[in-house]
Image (tube, rainbow, N blue to C red; front, side, top):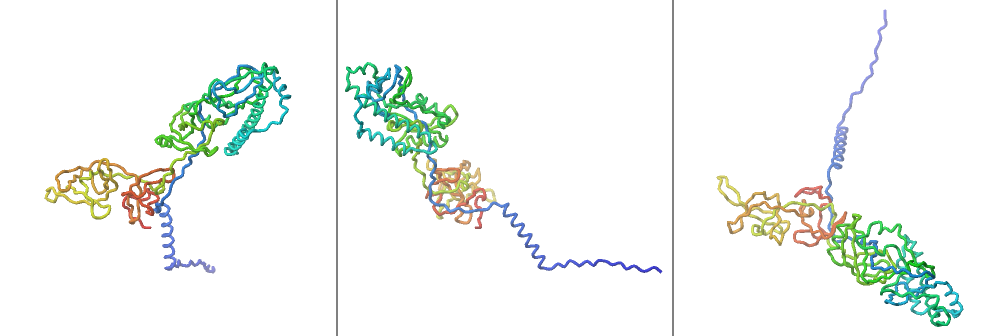
Amino acid sequence: MAKKQNKIKKYRKPINLNIGMIIFAVVFFYVVICIIMYFQTKHIVRYEVKEGFIASNNIYRGVVIRDETVVNTERAGYVNYYAYEGERVAKGDIVYTIDETGRLSEQLKAAASEENTLSDKELREFRSEVMNFMHGYDSEHFEYTYDFKRSLLNTVLKLASGNLLKAIQTMGDGSGVNNVINYCNAPMTGIVTYWTDGYESLTADMVTADIVDNKEYEKKQILNNDLLAAGDVAYKLSTNENWSVVIPIDAERGAELEREGYIKVRFLKNQYESWGAVKLLHNADGKTYLQLSFTNSMITFVGDRFLEVELIVNDEKGLKIPVSSIVEKEFFLIGKDFVTEGAAQGKYSVIRQCYKEDGTISSEVVVTDVYSYNEETEEYYVDATVLDAGNILYKPDSQETYTVSKRATLIGVYNMNKGYADFKQINILYKNDEYAIVKANTRYGLNVYDYIVLDADAVIDDQFINE
């Protein structure tokens, strides 16, 4: 007799759902949905309007343009200068001498036995040169220190040469010194400088970005007691007090400055300020430049080819708002004779033609907001959502009509003081990539401490806003 096999079945516990689990699941899914909707919805953030200004970066590096005449020596020999760097000489004044034999310095050593001292004028010359270098020093352009060193050495040698010239005159013709030197006079009136850089013939319309960057710029100093060949450059004369600085600039910004005509300029080298005439240039390299022309102080910067300048323009002050708040909106233009100002502030009304149920022509009063007024055309900017193109308006106390059709746009922001997106016109004084300065206390515009929508794309006209 076979034994009966007992099958053991696993007991499955029934799912025990209680009200707590159900509530937890519902709340969990609700939270997940809210989080998803939060990140998918544009959030309305308010911004408090405050007074402010935008201080733009107005420091530029430019190239100096001046009238320069290069003077070459006609004879070979050792050169000795007598005019100081930056000194004005008249036509016919002695600028330097040429010692063809090299015996001049040897003959003068015996005569120059006395100790030499610097006069007050010479000391002022040294002090001025050192102070100008200190004010204009820039660690990023340390190479200018070597120019200063050579310039200072030149000044010392020119002072010594002046004493030599006096010694020559003291020795007279009997010494035979005058037979070995040649006196070289200035061919015209001008300011003397002892350096060249190849830009002596540069004009404003020839300036390019490579010139302004001056990465390969080389300034060649002409030193006292150097041996020159016939035809070598002896010195330069700057013959005109009119000069200019050409700076690279953004085309839009340059056009704004050109409309000013004249702007105040501060030279960072010595903090000197002057007014410059403005001219916009579009040069051959396709870039825009601003030429700042001056009628004085050329002698102050006669030793410089490049200068850093600050344009002192009035920083626009007003209401400071983010650019993201700005929006453009379209309106109907309605003549002022067809608009009646209402009792409530900001509310106006028009009389619009309508039809009764029996088809007869009648009229109705439509209350609307006005967002601006054009004094030249004597027209109001009326909300385009209240009227429709083709509506016929009546002039009060007259049968004269006006057909709604003309449109125009305004630049503005959405004011949220009243709890909804209320368009307000703005008058932009200045704007950069982040902020705009707008005129304060205008009739249809903003006031300080108003709240506006930070992101204009996040709302639509007259949308209610829950903070």
